[in-house]
Image (cartoon, rainbow, N blue to C red):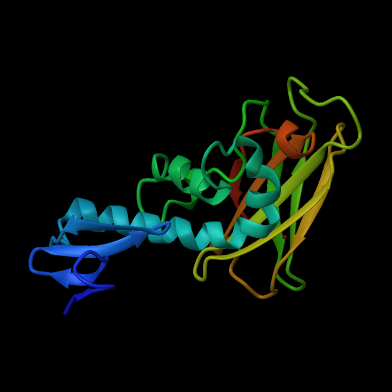
Length: 209
């Protein structure tokens, strides 16, 4: 039941007949009442599943990758929402880990070798070469590695100073997992704050080491 507040000239709270009273920034207003629809077509269900999938991944990336790095490309929306917007267009379904963009930018991608998972100790090692052509110029550029355990959507990450002539960098995850269940991503960035420039991420499924 709706209520008329402060007499007949006051604001309306709740539903009254075909309208709903509400308040926005101290301003009372009325809007038409409509019963929300809940469409369940196959296409809409698939879209919801994709969104839920990306939300789970994005939450795992929020503090370590999205907020510190993606904020540089977020315009009038959060880094989290930019991540969702970009990846909803890229993935085909809620199992498409290979299409997820963990790093997004216009710099040359990192030329990596392979992603090796050591079952005994949980080490995920990313071997890589310097970028070609090299868009980086100093020793404070940053390399970011991300590993996702697909059965649980658990996200692990690490970042190191970019060694431009190539090296290996690691992310630690739980041991005794199935290597094929681990998706690895690698990208690099330079700069800080609004001046950050990124590579697009490259990715691969881990293999046993």
